[in-house]
View 1 (cartoon, helix red, strand yellow):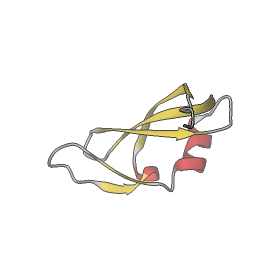
View 2 (cartoon, rainbow, N blue to C red):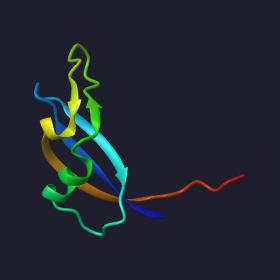
View 3 (tube, rainbow, N blue to C red):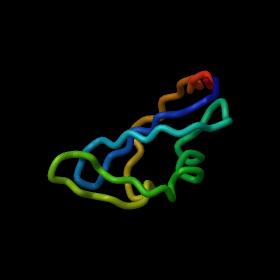
View 4 (spheres, rainbow, N blue to C red):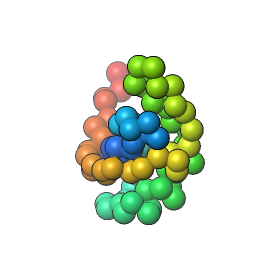
Amino acid sequence: MNNAYRFVLECPNGHNINLQRKCSKDSLSETEAMKIFGHEDISCQEAKCGWHGKALKTRLLRILPFNWILSPST
């Protein structure tokens, strides 16, 4: 298992965007999260929104840690 985080971001039109990423840090502040993942290209999946851009252009609502469980190789 690896540490991972789900970032809940808000697009400029007010819709939630979920971004899941692995990270080796045990805890992550909002500032650290935006430094590490802020330059990633994301897009809003809400119907008729169509917004896309850098994560830095959004508002970070929540950081949710979880264990990323690796699937066994066959």
